[in-house]
Image 1 (tube, rainbow, N blue to C red):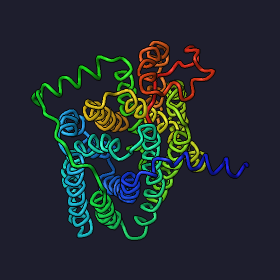
Image 2 (image 1 turned 45 degrees about the vertical axis):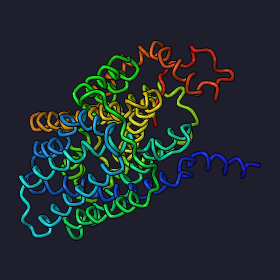
Image 3 (image 1 turned 45 degrees about the horizontal axis):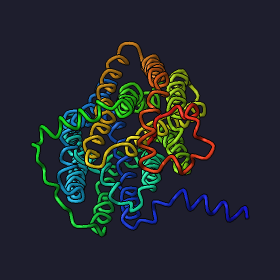
Image 4 (image 1 turned 135 degrees about the vertical axis):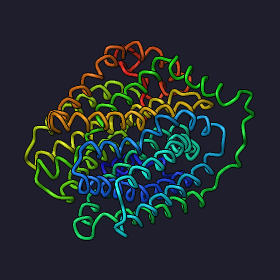
Length: 442
């Protein structure tokens, strides 16, 4: 009995993989993301090795992510208008070319900082269209709507498994043969995701007749997202988490080398610990069968994330730092993926691409601003106090959301009833007072 129950729970945790197209997507993206994390670690270490500048570390992140802030909303319009499968084939091919160019420059030892900045900006432009399209495309790959939240949670698991494996491998490779091989491996990893996209069996794309022009469509998306308080609140949480929380990854090379007195492998271990915590958080979400109650979890996880960053900023012991990175990774991914799950659950299908582009804009667009600010501040007050301040602001930023939870829950309740989410587990839970959280997304 116990074994059957355990097997049933395990099967439920991976239920979205029963969809053939999603399984292909999961495998291809998983391989490619390992390469992506390897390149990120290699670039961070390369820039800090060449320049010894915390500010330039922030500048590289800024150049790679600011295009998402500027182009993200327009990319959302494209995600609702064009064949998402073809858009992803184009963006992944261009990403492979970008990584290949970077690998050649590093391996031939002709790389300069302006090359890194320029190619990072190119990748940022590609990602602006790739991320919002990919977020909306997942919805097409899962036949049963009730498995969408599980698919999103598995996406987070895949992303963070890659974040656990990629940096750890990268740290060891950099220590032995340098950064160029890591970037080359990333270029080759795109073959896997391109193959998975080409093997999918999808329904023929049907272009929806657009009565409105792109600008009007964009305006409608903004009005819809920011006119409905639950969606607006979730996007704001993601923006604040990215603004105050994401800069920690930019500062990690400084902690690894100058505070913990390690090398590239130390940086890999720190990122790996964060990835392990995030993977645990994603699996925690994957085993949940409903979005109900995730609002409270978002509040708790934001506080955990902020507190972990504060404690990490004062740590000088590697073991303690690794443990705190694990907690920070757990809190970060549960907060982010929960917001994503809630958005995917309550958004109207015909506006999904535009809303998810705003999510991507908040996630990818605010991080570069935070990275630049953190890099500039760290040059004057040090990385320790800078990261402590980021953690404090991250924990405090969730307070308005916590206060407004009961009101937001009342607004999304009719949507849950319409989608049939409430009856799933409504027995004994009809007392709305216990559900002080808006739906979340996985």
